[in-house]
Length: 369
Image (tube, rainbow, N blue to C red; front, side):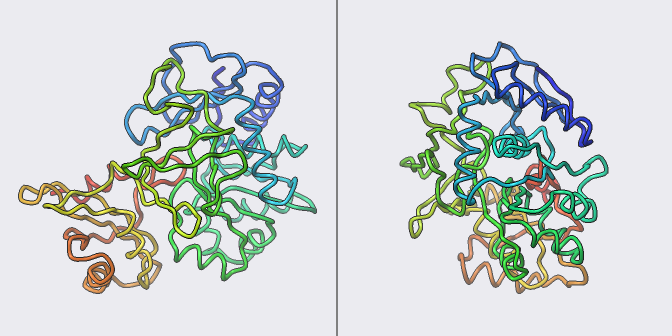
């Protein structure tokens, strides 16, 4: 069941063949990349096509059981939402659910994906070259925000390649408004996605659930997801409370705005500073909208007086200068005094984990006294 993948086209080709067989009723596949993956403690149930390791953002990684039914339901719903079959480029690590789903979507559409070599990391020129090999007709790919930013920065052939896609799914981490506006201004057709391994990947596109996906909000604001793309559960953990009543209780807070789901950030990330609660995602949005700011990560920094204070790591655009007072003023004006970062540090690059998510634990350690 375990199948090593290392970013090479050869290893990915073996995964494509294994996934094709698994979707047809063969042995399930557990793609394994460089990160440690726990050993399965039970056999997957009948109908399982893929077992995928979570990124471990909330502790020890879990093994998510995805059936052929859930994977193909997601792929077909994506196809309908994006306007029909397309050729797909795999530019994401294949051990993550987003990469697996690119393969599944491509196979459902009738052809294996074109594969970008990721052994030396994600490179804009490699993306352009891989895109050129897709041929004519509708084409789609899936990226994380960091990749999208690099391609926009590169310009030239990389930007031409971006513009050639019918749709580019962007997920794995929050897409800040400034980067989204840059992409749209460059005539790049992006679709923001929300989902996770437990929902067979992205299941809400531009705030609207895919066909067959159920979205609700619990009394505490947690997002509840269910429907055709829902995972069977966690391998060896049949009674995990996250899967209850045919739904998955996420760790994310959300709200409905103008008929679309708005994700407010993780409930566990909420900062309690004195008697105030601050949502890091809201502060990050304000900081990322400031001139010269490439990206920001906001966390709670331990403090003996307040319990926690708001801390922010900020990455600048090339050549930009820090404007800490202006950044703090902008946060105060939009979110109030409690949300203003008391600890603020400019960093050359934000620590990342998985396929491009901010490493909040690393940022917290970086900002802590």
